[in-house]
Length: 428
Ligand SMILES: Cc1cc2nc3c(=O)[nH]c(=O)nc-3n(C[C@H](O)[C@H](O)[C@H](O)COP(=O)(O)OP(=O)(O)OC[C@H]3O[C@@H](n4cnc5c(N)ncnc54)[C@H](O)[C@@H]3O)c2cc1C
View (cartoon, helix red, strand yellow):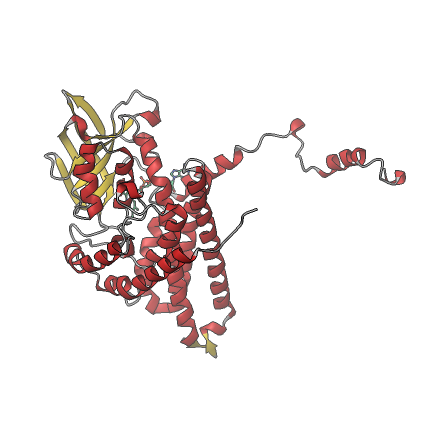
């Protein structure tokens, strides 16, 4: 029997260093809300500290220039790093670059590795992933962006949107249909496209609930892109043609664990703000801490965060021990459950702060807006619920004769036969 919730002392001291770094360096830097170029300049010495500590890109194996900590240790780290919005960028684990690095590490040719992977790992360039289209998102089998062979190479035509960081990126991973007659999941290919390739038009940084008036080319902008007769060389293809969906799934499994742990960090930060506020805010005869409704918020939030944390750590452990494919059910569960916990805890913290919580004088309003997106990106709640339910239902078959296996009169009858030798005959 092995069942252990403890963290080894080496990892614990590493986590303590990260906690201190996030509290005293990342959260103050976050408050400055700097434009991308200025952020990169001010953040450079902090990134250097993270690298010197051997914590940069901890999601990649050592053979790829990361520290290969495994999903479980990475999850513990991501919870702390995720407390700050800028934490993942300082640790080389910010999406979409983190997932793109994983895809490149697994599938890039030596030439692609030198041209795209190494500069991305080094942090000298940013990347984006362009999969969603105005007409196709939750169901990627409906994608219409086309990749056609021409001579030795390829030509790309199509329309994408919501590609995060595309206006800042040096290159894009674009998912396009290369074989429309293949079975739906074997139709798409991922191609590596330099952003300055002729025919690539970043049409706009899309105003969104996250940022209704985005400055152009800002970190975490989401972009609309049109590809018109973009000519690509044969070696623009990442991995095998037709394997785009399978590769993307591989990228998204561990990435969802990383997201969920960061959400737990955000939810805990919101709960900490809530708890501080209610100790001193006085109304109707007591501090808010004395109101039962507020006590319920605190207890419910703490329980939900703990449940989400354990579910997510379990999913991470499954990936480490059995692989991402075996952990599909756990990953689907945490994606929608984690997003709900994130939203609900921040919502209660906003409520406890009243008008101050609604104002931009607290980080809560930005956290709340970003939390709403978590229920949509990387697959909406409903799709993950559907996947989880389908996987769970695989363990069930209809009962014989249509009688539920727990039907009590039937059970009693069988039990009377099973225990006949022991039962008082008068009761039979
Ligand atoms: C902040 C943010 C960042 C993003 N970053 C990127 C990025 O970097 N690259 C990229 O390619 N995309 C990105 N996206 C897009 C994201 O992946 C899509 O929004 C997502 O896949 C859903 O697709 P859609 O928006 O087209 O929704 P639709 O496909 O139009 O679905 C709309 C709604 O329909 C419902 N629905 C769908 N399917 C089912 C079902 N089977 N059962 C029940 N209900 C269902 C859900 O409620 C869903 O929200 C981002 C989105 C956001 C919000």
